Length: 548
Ligand code: NOJ
Image 1: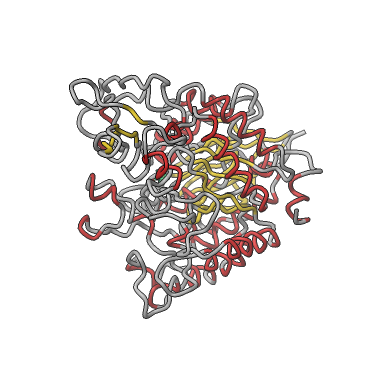
Image 2: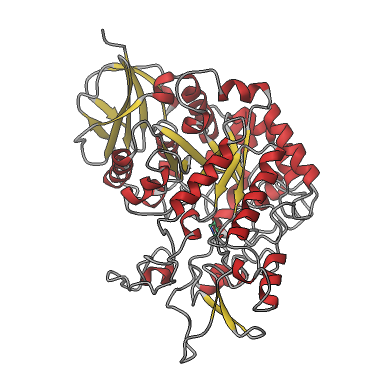
């Protein structure tokens, strides 16, 4: 292991790297195109490692780059142990990994256990005949006597979760597209093959995995029907998937021993390798269960409570304090504002540009492990794509749910195509109209930019022991529109106060101290005494002198 990484993995007291480290998500199609085909690739990421080191993140998570027919842009894997030519080669991956490690950046990759591509050789064999040795690697079921589907499960991407296979006369299960058949993790050979795939990358040196739809892998062994959702009113963030309560098609308790085994696999390697699990449970307790009773399951259960919370003081209070309230002893939470499936935070229909500084200050001062989505640091917004032009199959199946807008190319500079790909090339998705102003090159030189603020926040949290490892303490009640909390360690106290509104607000008796950093640079280093006046969309971090 590189000595920079080794130093942060062992030999120091306090949180482990993954408990407080900042993970930066890269959607590889959209980050940097090195070969001029309009699609980002691994060599493009390697060429931008200096930027990531300069920014000051701890790890990158790269969304899938495996060989794939790209029905779901790589979340339909046709080979778990190679690189799709559109992204490069295994040699490109090794170069990226080596370059990242040399800069002290860890590399996490996506692990897609719930389903493969229908073009994966395992599935091709499985569907070849009913007595193929791999038949039970997937879920095959007869039609009911009346010809009906085996059960009432629906696809998260709309429509039934079963597809009829004419040749063998049975249905197969697909929680997502029909091109993404679900793997049967109760089959020990399939499971062993997936563990081998993980070993392949761990042996190569990756620092861990982001586990795609982690709760999906274990379903009710009898595949019983889901009950209807009594609250269904025709609208749901996940479209028609909201019609049912998903009691039986995911999150069976058998997941827990599986993730304990997976953690044991990670921990059989040196270097503090980890798993981050994608989990969307709205219920706080169910979410926290993924840490494991002995905190021996998923290292970092992804926490989307902030992502889905209404962006109001009350909304984020409920999200933050709900999460903090269920954390197992000593555990740290993960925090996320957005990702490749969610609207970008700075978009007007989410928090908006005015609140972007407040949101990043919050993300980077909460206790735990924040995940930044590429472009969040410069305030990228969703770029609309009409349904008829959409690449994301979800948009065509359920208009309005498409994820192309949050996957637009990274805005590096003011050149045509924003420096993502050469000027004469068509990028795979449209570049944001504001890219000439909103880009890394312009903001990197501007002391008042969002990028500069992000970088300074990242530096501060690395260097400030209270921000890194201090406890979380709720503060309240606070006046309407303000959310505030404390971080504490020993006698030290840091107060974080956020104005979630576009009007001035006052936080009475906020404490006496010095502003360590704020969304508005003119306040940095100033004294804060008594009542704290916050300007519209302003947030500050105040350090109180250590008592006693
Ligand atoms: C979650 C991923 O984040 C999303 O992009 C993908 O479509 C589904 N899982 C299916 O793999």
